[in-house]
Amino acid sequence: MALARDAKGENFKSVAVIGDGAMTGGMALEAINHAGHLPHTRLLVVLNDNDMSISPNVGAMSRYLNKMRLSPPIQFLSDNFEEQLRQLPFNESITPELMRLKGGMKRLAVSKVGAVFEELGFTYMGPVDGHNLEELIATFKEAHKHEGPVLVHVSTTKGKGYAIAEQDQVGYHAQNPFNLETGKAPPSNKPKPPSYAKVFAETLIQLAENNPKVIGITAAMATGTGLDKLQAKLPKQYIDVGIAEQHATTLAAGMACEQMRPVVAIYSTFLQRAYDQIIHDICIQSLPVFFCLDRAGIVGADGPTHQGMYDIAYLRCLPNMVLMAPKDEAEMQQMLVTGINYTQGPIAMRYPRGSGHGVALMEEGWEAIPIGKAEVLHQGEDVLFLAYGTMVYPAIQVADMLTEHGIKATVVNARFAKPLDTELIIPLAQQIGQVVTFEEGCIAGGFGTAVLESLMEQQVLVPVTRIGVPDRLVEHATPDQSKIALGLTPSQMSERVLEMLKQNPAPSFVS
Image (cartoon, rainbow, N blue to C red; front, side, top):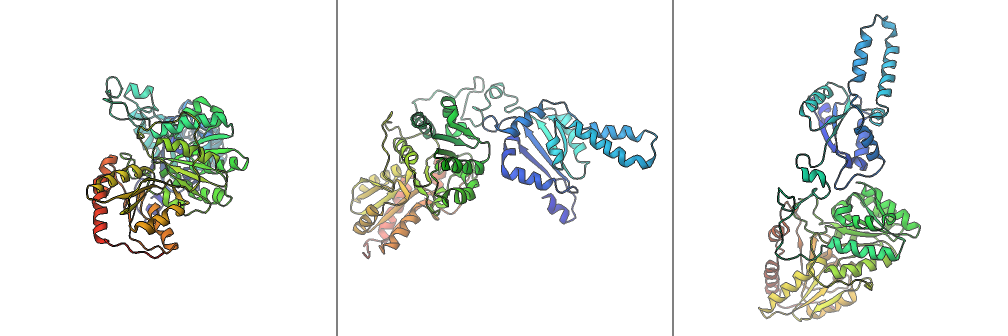
């Protein structure tokens, strides 16, 4: 925006606000490197430093900012020094030497504070108390006087103003409704089943205890993914790289090269940042990296940036990649064993945010699922339901609703989007002649598309209805509200299947 302003000859202020946790990200460092090379471009960067992202920040950058935060403000030192020098009766010819002296004094002053940013071409100011409005205003006024990029380092406290949140900065990053006086959630009428993240973490811990080669890797999402539990129990088998998904992915590739078993736990939407690394560093070499994609599908109130809609489509097209999704938390336990035991190449498991279905969990002795093998859950002769992951139970509900209309459905838990269980699916499609696919992800390029491709390759021409997320962004809402808007409730899907069957009463296929 600042460059566009200058190119158009306009005059307005361009300010970027960035959190200290995001300073570990590649794009932030790339932009700082670029901006520092533009000495005449007026740009203000406000670094909001609270030593936190979702969890406490990690890494060398965090340590450096922490040292800066504890140092006294020095932003006006060099300017005051220059003003004092100008009052001395020196000859004009000594000005260059004075300027070098000024630069030396400034470098000395910021040597333990803003030296890195100064060396990168920024004028550094701070640290400034981010909760002192007068100090902020004075600093920003001074910053806007400078030509070229300026970085104002603002020190803040996460949760400031609410003592309970200040004391529990991790727990109050994203909260459900709670009592303001106590800070606790209201009592629930009935206990919820454990979350997928909790089942994932507890199962992974047991597997890691029995296999020291298992390493859990996260990109600043320890609490969200549940890997904070692995950190507490087996800290030597846990790595947090900060907000740096690209590095996390290539780090896992390197560890896989050395016969370790890296388990990369990243939200579906955030793995998109590491797409190049997945292709070039993992798939090309067919390295056994296990991706565990939390928050896959509709995630609710986090808005369009966090919806896990695209992982099936963007991973399915990659050679050597295996994709699987559990129908419930018990099957997730089996898939964790499957992913850790799989050594022929990369493998990914997607699973949703929130609680499981309350099915019985196994404490140990889980068995791996054969790669690419589906299972038949219901038998019927009128329509074939192929469901993937979180849509298996809704597909069963749809099948139950259709029985009221005299329609009997075969329901298949696909388990794998790649490779598909064509040995099971193709004969059933030929026999039944009507196919409906169910997925909680984008329809374009997703699981249903994979089924269509397989049927076409086998020259099986039957009516296929794909049910999933249409080609649009899913906005801020609760998951239930989003499903209603997208036509993904069981009643809505049953009506759609009924309409499809009316339009195609006589199945036709070529075998």
